[in-house]
Image (tube, rainbow, N blue to C red; front, top):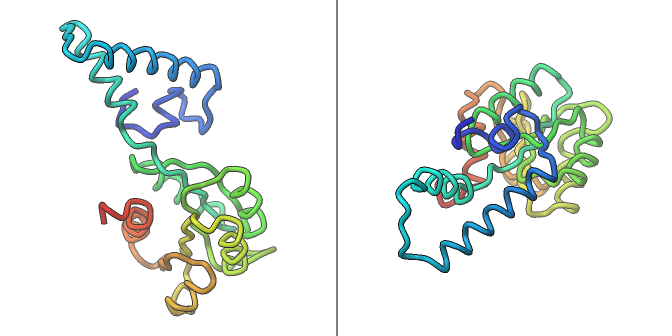
Amino acid sequence: MGYGQPLHTRLNGKGDYTMGLALLQRKIAVYRLWSSWVAENPSCRIPHLNNATSSMLTFWSSPMPKSVLVVDDNASIRQALCRVFTSEAEFGLCGEAENGQDAIEKAQALHPDLIVMDLSMPVMNGIDAARTLKTLMPMVPVIIFSEYSDVFSEQEARSAGISALVSKSEDVSVLIDRARALLYPAAA
């Protein structure tokens, strides 16, 4: 597995969205030992360790992928969005939800960096869910990805706690670009 792959693939090699606590603890212990040795020996060069050192630096210094919660009542759209986000190095999937109420519960449990949500869903729609999520998690951006995103003005969306509106009729790259702009403002 290469270091350019999403974190969940990189850490356990199975593509699972979880990682064993023991594996994480071992990786942290190795990193701490290595970084303390480097701090004590800044001028020391060991040729046969160059590749290992370089790989470890790449792994630990690369930014962690931002976790995304995908919310849509249509399972096909949810799965497609999950594939799109996990194919991008900057993003990782933390979970899926099929309605607004489910999104609120999963967001509280999973603590995503970004929520991508449909507007029209059963049980609780995207607007009501966004309002609730903004009170519970005010720093987490919410993107409404919907066929009906043109129903609201930007001002109405912002007052409901929505960070961006993207129409499902637009190319998926627009959604990814908006997500990047919200999570990595310096890169936008």
